[in-house]
Each structure stands twice: as C-alpha cells, then as structure tokens.
Image 1 (spheres, rainbow, N blue to C red):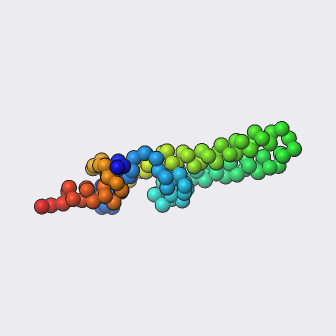
Image 2 (spheres, helix red, strand yellow):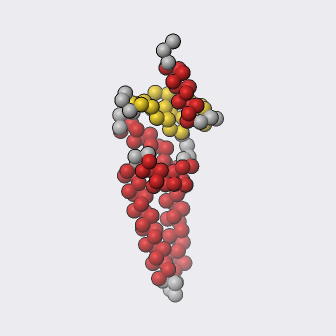
Length: 128
C-alpha cells in the first residue's frame, strides 16, 4: 500500500499526491514538471540540464588535457542529479504548488493507487 494525500479546491476539484519518491518525475523530469504546472522547478531543471550539456561539451573539447576526466565526471554527476532531485523532491514540490494555488489537504490515506485513494475520499464524503 502507498500513502496518498488528497487535496481539494472549491472550484478546481480534487488532486491526489503520493508521498515519497516520484518515478514519473525521475524518468520524465521537466516534462512531468510542465504537466504538473511546476514552472520554477522546470526552468531550473532545464537550466541545470543546459549547464551539464555545456560541461560535457567543454569536457569533449579538452580531451588532450588532464581536466578532461574531471569535467566528464562532473557532467555525469550533474545528469544524475538532474534525474534524482526531481524524483526525491517532486511530490513535495507538487504539494507546495497545490497549496499555493488554493488547494487544502483534506485527507491522507493508504491505497494501492491514486484512483483508489480518490475513490475512498469520494465514498467517505458522499451524502447518504
């Protein structure tokens, strides 16, 4: 079972956010951020990716110098961080973004999926 937080907005509806590591953010980083409306994080990730690309280009240009190995290692570490940071922080970013857009945390539940967590919430709040 996974833990989900259910957020509700009076006009925009209900959103669920899984706690913990975000595999979609890990694999799809800035595309996932754009889909989830995390614009500042998306811009910073693209900037970091461009910086890692520049570092990789510099490493390629300096193949004959002793700095090549260090620059290539730094570029590799930057690419790893560009994937890992969104994976570890993506869901927390998403929660803060929802709160800043007027959503309120209404429930935390254990469920096998986001849809199941949403169904539990709807069932609990449905009028009898």
